[in-house]
Length: 333
Image (cartoon, rainbow, N blue to C red; front, side, top):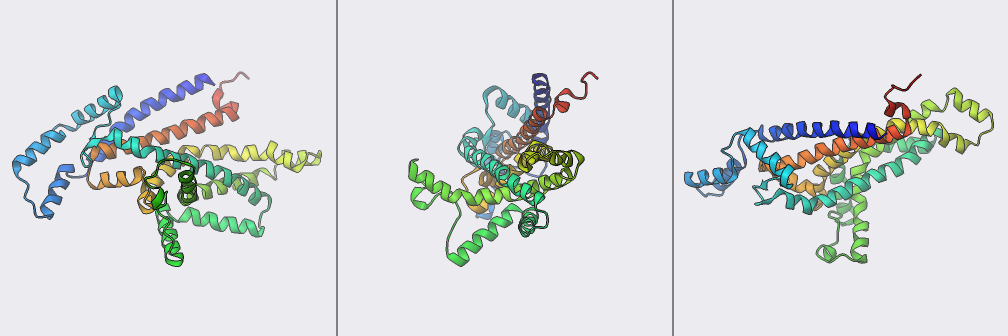
């Protein structure tokens, strides 16, 4: 198991190095840069930007350097000092901005992932063991809705509906009285009363996919001969389900963690501005609009790393559950 784990980690380090360059290249593909956006905004407001100021800003931001030089400096600072560069728009180190915004994003992603699995598994088991039951139809309908509607659109519909019908604004994670208050029990309870909506929206699509996956796998397993034989021998139905078919049905679903984590993360980046969350999402959106390459590139690199981390996590869980995976088919026969 340890050898398998080390092998996976080594491969992921190489993958992150490749992704860092691809990410930086993608950020620099659009025409122009932060300075051109800045000049356009200044001219739109009626201010004339002198050439001397443009030259000074170009040197200050290092925009006159070749792409490979900018990438090398970015990676060198990241590896040696943990420095992700300086945000042009915020005029602050990217590291400080991420330190303020990333904890909430990570918290939302992890609690949403937990919510998906805790809710999806019981629903999938019930739907598979009660096919064509009225509740099975209800779960399938909600599953298709979750799969079809993007998170940001679902957020807009819910926020608009609650405000229009009940005059109840539900954006943000705190009531106005608790936004700047120090942490205490009251503020924590206030957070819990608001956090259900982001979790529901961020987890809807992944939860629907998990239910469909586990339900389909379990339906395939239940008619198999080993289940019929175990049932004929008198094994209790609940023990039978959890000992054999459910374990086999969940195995393929575990591999979805590799894309569930980045899916929730990327969904949060788009949905957070709609829900007015003080997370990475609004900052990332602004960095894309202003072509703030170091801030946008750092967020994209983190998203890529989350994808790799999710893949490692799913591989390790599968290897722990299935010895054939960690042995790689090289066991002695």
